[in-house]
Length: 436
Image 1 (cartoon, rainbow, N blue to C red):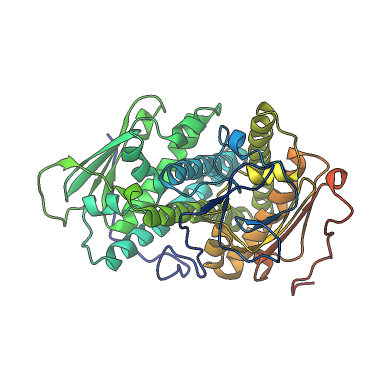
Image 2: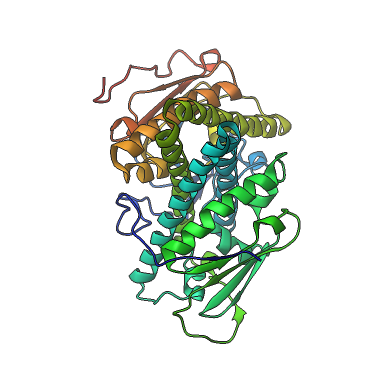
């Protein structure tokens, strides 16, 4: 077994938010009321503003009937069809861990493969910084509840959904005491996604080789794991030790996170932010070390991510018998558009989506790293959104009247599909942000 002994924690660059979790202006996710609208399925109505006679559904003004929500749940529980209850949040967390797997594939392994040893060194450095960043989040979580750092406390206050899901979904076991805890992963959802890739084992090994030592360093802990034993098929143990913690008897460790819905939503939100942070640290390291060569590869792998996501969505929606249009895509988007991304009221039809995103987990975390973070975030936005929508359907047009990564207060999505637009639907007015 490979033993990696790490030194005490160090501060990471940037200025993470003091609370480590909750964004300003968070929408509280309570139990939505159910209303029946003639000719439509029952839909959940949340308390958002709308004009007289308008139905605001999860912040979206619906102009057209015929929601396919019931059928959609067989494919996905996110997008504007997301359900914010225990089952829904567990499924959202699983979805977010699939994103971590996708991000690791494209922003770590693919970059390293294309750029050779120098690229791999840069990626490992970025993943290590990402691990240290996450360790600081765990330390802050422990400080907020005045709990001293122990191996058990670290795992039960883990900053990401993976360890919480292991116990909740029986895809892993966690056992130990205050001084040492062993997490044995058996078949988490990120492994399931990695297995679909030809180089999935290599993706996973590179990811853990970079992230776990960074976490240990930031926590002042020791982590023991053997990348060579990881095959994404057999159980794989990772042991966390804090020599300063008191010894004690071993017992099962379970955070029971999903018993506390608000806390579970916050961990889901933090997991989404961590996905954005993974992109930032890899892109930052690669572009600093390899400049334009690195930037060109980062742009390409963002487009590759857009292709993977859009292809998954298109395949699922066609299999469900749905027409490919703007409303289908956004109702069943592969992201949490209720509990995490926050929106002002807007318009959604088969041909138009006009809505302002007021809080985005990626933009929030990129903003922690100042202009550098926003610049790399804009690179992501520029490459991902047009590629994603046009891959899903070539008739779609992506425009923004404002975008957070250019310094605007909101991302003003103005997505259209001219072949499905009606004459009375709003049109793009042009960029209205400050950076004209």
